[in-house]
Length: 290
Image (tube, rainbow, N blue to C red; front, side):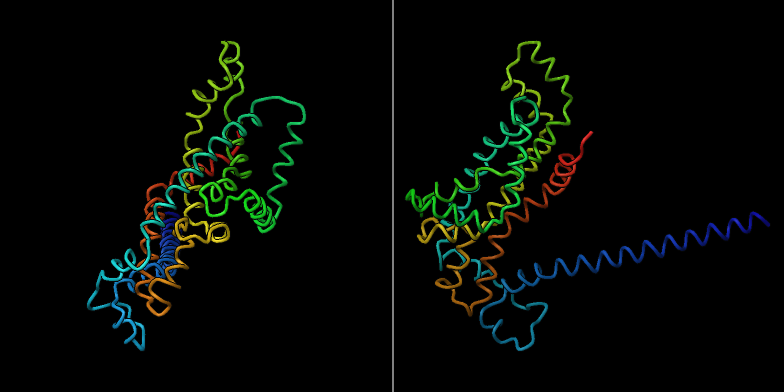
Protein backbone atom coordinates (compact mmCIF):
# COMPACT_ATOMS: atom_id res chain seq x y z
CA UNK A 1 0.00 0.00 0.00
CA UNK A 2 2.77 2.38 0.96
CA UNK A 3 4.65 1.42 -2.20
CA UNK A 4 1.65 2.33 -4.39
CA UNK A 5 1.28 5.63 -2.61
CA UNK A 6 4.95 6.34 -3.05
CA UNK A 7 4.70 5.51 -6.77
CA UNK A 8 1.75 7.88 -7.19
CA UNK A 9 3.63 10.70 -5.45
CA UNK A 10 6.68 10.05 -7.62
CA UNK A 11 4.57 10.07 -10.81
CA UNK A 12 2.96 13.38 -9.79
CA UNK A 13 6.38 14.86 -9.14
CA UNK A 14 7.59 13.68 -12.55
CA UNK A 15 4.50 15.11 -14.26
CA UNK A 16 4.93 18.46 -12.49
CA UNK A 17 8.56 18.51 -13.51
CA UNK A 18 7.66 17.76 -17.14
CA UNK A 19 4.95 20.43 -17.18
CA UNK A 20 7.27 22.97 -15.56
CA UNK A 21 10.06 22.22 -18.03
CA UNK A 22 7.65 22.38 -20.98
CA UNK A 23 6.31 25.77 -19.89
CA UNK A 24 9.86 27.03 -19.33
CA UNK A 25 11.06 25.95 -22.77
CA UNK A 26 7.92 27.38 -24.38
CA UNK A 27 8.48 30.77 -22.76
CA UNK A 28 12.19 30.74 -23.63
CA UNK A 29 11.39 29.84 -27.23
CA UNK A 30 8.81 32.63 -27.41
CA UNK A 31 11.29 35.10 -25.96
CA UNK A 32 14.01 33.96 -28.40
CA UNK A 33 11.65 34.47 -31.34
CA UNK A 34 10.80 37.96 -30.13
CA UNK A 35 14.49 38.84 -29.78
CA UNK A 36 15.62 37.29 -33.09
CA UNK A 37 12.72 38.50 -35.21
CA UNK A 38 14.18 42.02 -35.79
CA UNK A 39 17.41 40.44 -37.05
CA UNK A 40 15.46 38.16 -39.36
CA UNK A 41 13.42 41.09 -40.66
CA UNK A 42 16.58 43.14 -41.22
CA UNK A 43 18.25 40.37 -43.24
CA UNK A 44 15.03 39.61 -45.12
CA UNK A 45 14.57 43.24 -46.11
CA UNK A 46 18.21 43.50 -47.20
CA UNK A 47 17.74 40.77 -49.85
CA UNK A 48 14.57 42.27 -51.31
CA UNK A 49 14.79 44.39 -54.42
CA UNK A 50 13.76 48.02 -54.20
CA UNK A 51 10.80 47.43 -56.51
CA UNK A 52 9.49 44.33 -54.73
CA UNK A 53 9.80 46.03 -51.35
CA UNK A 54 7.78 49.05 -52.45
CA UNK A 55 5.19 46.81 -54.14
CA UNK A 56 4.34 45.11 -50.83
CA UNK A 57 1.23 46.77 -49.43
CA UNK A 58 1.26 44.11 -46.72
CA UNK A 59 4.78 43.13 -45.58
CA UNK A 60 5.73 39.56 -46.46
CA UNK A 61 7.74 37.27 -44.21
CA UNK A 62 9.62 35.79 -47.19
CA UNK A 63 10.86 36.82 -50.61
CA UNK A 64 10.60 34.61 -53.71
CA UNK A 65 13.49 36.35 -55.48
CA UNK A 66 16.31 37.30 -53.06
CA UNK A 67 19.04 39.55 -54.41
CA UNK A 68 22.48 40.68 -53.24
CA UNK A 69 22.36 43.89 -55.25
CA UNK A 70 21.72 45.91 -52.10
CA UNK A 71 25.01 44.72 -50.61
CA UNK A 72 26.89 45.86 -53.69
CA UNK A 73 25.20 49.23 -53.43
CA UNK A 74 26.22 49.47 -49.76
CA UNK A 75 29.88 49.65 -50.80
CA UNK A 76 29.47 51.77 -53.93
CA UNK A 77 26.95 54.47 -52.99
CA UNK A 78 29.14 55.61 -50.06
CA UNK A 79 32.75 54.84 -49.01
CA UNK A 80 31.65 52.14 -46.56
CA UNK A 81 35.05 50.42 -46.80
CA UNK A 82 36.64 53.68 -45.60
CA UNK A 83 34.22 53.79 -42.68
CA UNK A 84 35.24 50.25 -41.78
CA UNK A 85 38.94 51.14 -41.91
CA UNK A 86 38.41 54.21 -39.70
CA UNK A 87 36.44 52.13 -37.21
CA UNK A 88 39.11 49.43 -37.07
CA UNK A 89 41.84 52.03 -36.46
CA UNK A 90 39.73 53.76 -33.81
CA UNK A 91 38.81 50.49 -32.09
CA UNK A 92 42.30 48.98 -32.01
CA UNK A 93 44.04 52.20 -30.95
CA UNK A 94 41.48 53.05 -28.27
CA UNK A 95 41.40 49.54 -26.83
CA UNK A 96 45.20 49.21 -26.83
CA UNK A 97 45.77 52.59 -25.16
CA UNK A 98 43.04 51.90 -22.61
CA UNK A 99 44.67 48.62 -21.56
CA UNK A 100 48.00 50.42 -21.13
CA UNK A 101 46.24 52.89 -18.81
CA UNK A 102 43.90 50.68 -16.77
CA UNK A 103 46.24 47.73 -16.05
CA UNK A 104 48.86 49.77 -14.10
CA UNK A 105 46.05 51.74 -12.42
CA UNK A 106 44.28 48.57 -11.27
CA UNK A 107 47.60 47.12 -10.08
CA UNK A 108 48.40 50.26 -8.09
CA UNK A 109 45.02 50.29 -6.35
CA UNK A 110 45.10 46.56 -5.60
CA UNK A 111 48.72 45.97 -4.52
CA UNK A 112 50.66 49.17 -3.87
CA UNK A 113 50.41 51.05 -0.61
CA UNK A 114 50.49 54.83 -0.76
CA UNK A 115 48.99 57.67 1.20
CA UNK A 116 45.41 58.51 0.28
CA UNK A 117 44.89 55.39 -1.84
CA UNK A 118 41.36 54.74 -0.61
CA UNK A 119 40.40 58.40 -0.98
CA UNK A 120 41.75 58.56 -4.53
CA UNK A 121 39.92 55.36 -5.48
CA UNK A 122 36.69 56.68 -3.96
CA UNK A 123 37.06 59.85 -6.03
CA UNK A 124 37.62 57.66 -9.09
CA UNK A 125 34.42 55.77 -8.42
CA UNK A 126 32.53 59.02 -7.88
CA UNK A 127 33.31 59.94 -11.50
CA UNK A 128 30.89 57.22 -12.54
CA UNK A 129 28.10 59.32 -11.03
CA UNK A 130 28.72 62.21 -13.43
CA UNK A 131 26.27 62.17 -16.39
CA UNK A 132 27.98 61.29 -19.63
CA UNK A 133 26.49 64.36 -21.32
CA UNK A 134 28.51 66.66 -19.04
CA UNK A 135 31.72 64.78 -19.85
CA UNK A 136 31.01 64.99 -23.58
CA UNK A 137 30.57 68.77 -23.37
CA UNK A 138 33.88 69.16 -21.51
CA UNK A 139 35.70 66.82 -23.87
CA UNK A 140 34.29 68.62 -26.91
CA UNK A 141 35.51 71.99 -25.68
CA UNK A 142 38.95 70.58 -24.84
CA UNK A 143 39.41 68.77 -28.15
CA UNK A 144 38.15 71.79 -30.11
CA UNK A 145 40.50 74.18 -28.28
CA UNK A 146 43.42 71.83 -29.00
CA UNK A 147 42.55 71.81 -32.70
CA UNK A 148 41.93 68.06 -32.79
CA UNK A 149 38.56 67.98 -34.49
CA UNK A 150 38.48 65.68 -37.53
CA UNK A 151 41.57 63.79 -36.35
CA UNK A 152 42.14 60.28 -35.06
CA UNK A 153 43.58 61.71 -31.84
CA UNK A 154 40.40 63.68 -31.26
CA UNK A 155 38.36 60.51 -31.67
CA UNK A 156 40.60 58.32 -29.52
CA UNK A 157 41.86 60.35 -26.56
CA UNK A 158 38.59 60.82 -24.61
CA UNK A 159 38.03 57.04 -24.57
CA UNK A 160 41.44 55.75 -23.44
CA UNK A 161 40.40 55.19 -19.84
CA UNK A 162 37.43 53.74 -17.98
CA UNK A 163 36.74 53.88 -14.26
CA UNK A 164 34.47 50.85 -14.49
CA UNK A 165 37.13 48.68 -16.15
CA UNK A 166 39.73 49.82 -13.60
CA UNK A 167 37.34 48.78 -10.83
CA UNK A 168 36.58 45.44 -12.51
CA UNK A 169 40.26 44.61 -12.99
CA UNK A 170 41.17 45.80 -9.50
CA UNK A 171 38.60 43.43 -7.99
CA UNK A 172 40.09 40.61 -10.05
CA UNK A 173 43.66 41.43 -9.02
CA UNK A 174 42.63 41.42 -5.35
CA UNK A 175 41.53 37.79 -5.65
CA UNK A 176 45.16 36.80 -6.25
CA UNK A 177 46.74 35.86 -2.87
CA UNK A 178 48.87 38.65 -1.51
CA UNK A 179 51.41 36.05 -0.35
CA UNK A 180 52.50 35.64 -3.97
CA UNK A 181 53.31 39.34 -4.14
CA UNK A 182 55.26 39.25 -0.88
CA UNK A 183 57.20 36.18 -1.98
CA UNK A 184 58.03 37.85 -5.29
CA UNK A 185 59.30 40.95 -3.49
CA UNK A 186 61.49 38.77 -1.25
CA UNK A 187 63.00 37.24 -4.40
CA UNK A 188 63.76 40.71 -5.70
CA UNK A 189 61.10 40.73 -8.41
CA UNK A 190 60.09 44.19 -9.56
CA UNK A 191 56.46 45.28 -9.53
CA UNK A 192 56.38 45.45 -13.31
CA UNK A 193 57.79 41.93 -13.70
CA UNK A 194 55.35 40.57 -11.11
CA UNK A 195 52.45 42.24 -12.90
CA UNK A 196 53.59 40.91 -16.26
CA UNK A 197 54.45 37.33 -15.27
CA UNK A 198 52.00 36.58 -12.46
CA UNK A 199 48.95 38.84 -12.33
CA UNK A 200 48.23 39.21 -16.03
CA UNK A 201 48.30 35.45 -16.82
CA UNK A 202 46.06 34.69 -13.83
CA UNK A 203 43.64 37.48 -14.77
CA UNK A 204 43.55 36.61 -18.47
CA UNK A 205 39.78 35.79 -18.58
CA UNK A 206 38.86 39.19 -17.16
CA UNK A 207 41.34 41.00 -19.42
CA UNK A 208 39.95 39.23 -22.49
CA UNK A 209 36.44 40.19 -21.37
CA UNK A 210 37.40 43.85 -20.97
CA UNK A 211 39.01 43.89 -24.42
CA UNK A 212 35.92 42.36 -26.04
CA UNK A 213 33.54 44.74 -24.26
CA UNK A 214 35.69 47.73 -25.22
CA UNK A 215 35.79 46.61 -28.85
CA UNK A 216 32.00 46.37 -28.89
CA UNK A 217 31.72 49.75 -27.19
CA UNK A 218 34.03 51.41 -29.73
CA UNK A 219 32.29 49.79 -32.69
CA UNK A 220 28.90 51.05 -31.47
CA UNK A 221 30.15 54.51 -30.49
CA UNK A 222 27.94 57.14 -32.11
CA UNK A 223 27.49 60.38 -30.16
CA UNK A 224 31.15 61.34 -29.75
CA UNK A 225 32.28 60.49 -33.33
CA UNK A 226 29.23 62.28 -34.71
CA UNK A 227 30.02 65.34 -32.59
CA UNK A 228 33.75 65.61 -33.20
CA UNK A 229 33.89 64.79 -36.93
CA UNK A 230 32.22 66.48 -39.87
CA UNK A 231 34.76 65.29 -42.43
CA UNK A 232 33.72 62.13 -44.28
CA UNK A 233 37.34 60.92 -44.22
CA UNK A 234 37.02 60.31 -40.46
CA UNK A 235 33.51 58.87 -40.28
CA UNK A 236 33.05 55.59 -38.41
CA UNK A 237 30.50 52.96 -39.40
CA UNK A 238 28.18 54.18 -36.65
CA UNK A 239 27.90 57.80 -37.75
CA UNK A 240 28.46 56.76 -41.37
CA UNK A 241 24.96 55.26 -41.26
CA UNK A 242 23.52 58.78 -41.19
CA UNK A 243 25.62 59.71 -44.21
CA UNK A 244 24.35 56.60 -45.98
CA UNK A 245 20.78 57.56 -45.20
CA UNK A 246 21.09 61.20 -46.21
CA UNK A 247 23.48 61.15 -49.17
CA UNK A 248 23.84 57.52 -50.15
CA UNK A 249 20.74 55.57 -51.03
CA UNK A 250 18.19 58.09 -49.90
CA UNK A 251 15.60 57.62 -47.21
CA UNK A 252 13.26 55.68 -49.48
CA UNK A 253 15.66 52.85 -50.33
CA UNK A 254 15.09 50.83 -47.16
CA UNK A 255 16.45 47.49 -48.53
CA UNK A 256 19.84 49.05 -49.37
CA UNK A 257 19.91 50.72 -45.96
CA UNK A 258 19.20 47.40 -44.27
CA UNK A 259 22.00 45.76 -46.25
CA UNK A 260 24.44 48.38 -44.94
CA UNK A 261 23.22 47.80 -41.39
CA UNK A 262 23.70 44.02 -41.78
CA UNK A 263 27.27 44.54 -43.01
CA UNK A 264 28.04 46.89 -40.12
CA UNK A 265 26.46 44.61 -37.49
CA UNK A 266 27.98 41.33 -38.70
CA UNK A 267 31.44 41.71 -37.06
CA UNK A 268 29.90 42.37 -33.63
CA UNK A 269 27.49 39.45 -33.97
CA UNK A 270 30.38 37.13 -34.84
CA UNK A 271 32.49 38.42 -31.92
CA UNK A 272 29.64 37.96 -29.47
CA UNK A 273 28.79 34.45 -30.69
CA UNK A 274 32.42 33.38 -30.36
CA UNK A 275 33.23 35.01 -27.02
CA UNK A 276 29.88 35.28 -25.18
CA UNK A 277 30.89 32.57 -22.66
CA UNK A 278 34.17 34.33 -21.91
CA UNK A 279 32.36 37.64 -21.50
CA UNK A 280 29.96 36.22 -18.91
CA UNK A 281 32.71 34.24 -17.14
CA UNK A 282 35.05 37.21 -17.00
CA UNK A 283 32.44 39.61 -15.64
CA UNK A 284 31.25 37.14 -12.99
CA UNK A 285 34.83 36.29 -12.01
CA UNK A 286 35.81 39.94 -11.77
CA UNK A 287 32.83 40.74 -9.54
CA UNK A 288 33.29 37.83 -7.12
CA UNK A 289 35.63 38.09 -4.18
CA UNK A 290 37.12 35.27 -2.16
